[in-house]
Image 1 (spheres, rainbow over the protein chains, first blue to last red):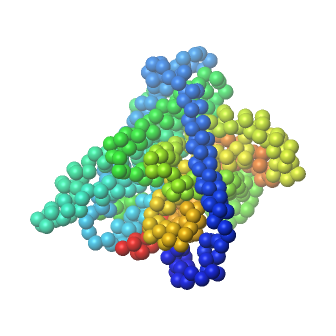
Image 2: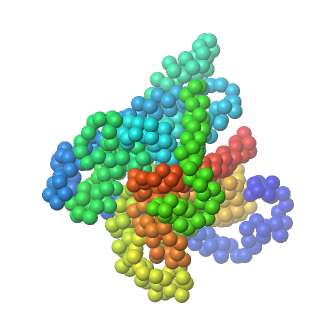
Image 3: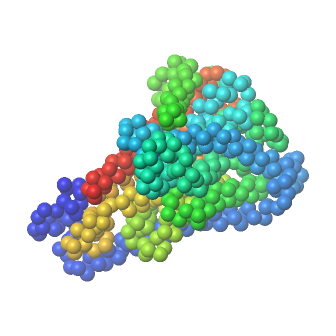
Length: 304
Length: 293
């Protein structure tokens, strides 16, 4: 009972009052103390937001000058020459994330449907849900190494295909949990009406619940896509990088986050400029879907 | 159903395959892998101690810096903020939790490190130089930069999860405290925080897991030198960074296996950390349900 805080009080004699933190000091000191602590908490929020806003503004200011038509439509210029863009990296990112979606969306949505299905809660669903949560917290570096041992070693080459697979593994638990959460928002009565007609649960999910929540599911998927679009780590072990435009799935492929890393680590000022602009584009790709989700589905909280 | 079970199978397969690939290194070094400082690809001798040290210290530093700020921010957003700005603040923190590590790495590399080298580190040395922590050449890249960047990265996550946990504390808890004549801060300190303790520890553990696994941001600011130094200004190396930096250059099978060995340790540790974190948040949720229904 003690651990329940205020609910645990049985006696309110003076000694217990003292222990409870409602001190017997003058009310005035307690008011001041309260103001002080509230102020400190407000200061914490301000510090947090200020630091992060400073970083975002800095990237905005550094990135905007480099954002021009060339940046999006041209491959990189030879070292030392001005101009050039990240066309190859943007198409590369699109292909890689697209591949990841081909695998993670059907698998994740199906698993999400299974988790949200109207059945008695069993140990299997709880275990799968828990696994998905744990898997989404495991660093993406392990997904990269896993696909390396599974695909790259066997194909004897780094490839875009392996990159897509690695990103799919990072996406999968997020798609699963997002889908489940959104399907749960569908009114219970709708499902029960269909079930009462004798339709099996998976038909109910597929033909009634899923269409009702289609827009939300789509947003959940977009958020998961945005999450993997900015992460170069799984690609170090799978798709690697490519200085040229390529659409060959069996060859290494460039991607936006990998190019940002390469440009930032390089010695040239022109490269650094490309890195800042790339970072700005990346932030846009990641934050826009979240803003969109907020506008379209006001009640829905972003999952982590 | 098959898809759901496939998810379980996937995790098992990941553990098995990574374990297998690390095999040669596990056989060659066994447990001494974790206590050896030497990392010598030429002579085929590998020990992960400097990397484990780098990961642990940078994570600890990040939690020390981010912890109080995140908790304070979560309390403010959940308890004290006026309703109008509450949602906006919460949403902004949610947004910032989604910014990828490479963005922070880029900023850390070009802005934070030069600033540390030019102004903060010399000043720290001037005032606190009697501590070995704050001695040595101010290079800007190193443990301090890594800790700060990590703290900036994990604080939105800890804040967001803690806030969710604080918000599910039943109103009856607060009302009971108010009825006893408590000030708003006393309500938080004596009723809300103790009640939410399990969930908050879970949120911090989640942040810990994120910090251990963070790769790009650290690779760009920590200096990437496998050494164990008492100074916070000195460059260090983390488990994730060494894997990313050396993986494509590893020619010897044993070198590759040693890197995968590190990844295996990382995988198992983060699996454990995340399991504990999720379990705590889950327990908290269940308790709330039990007492409100």
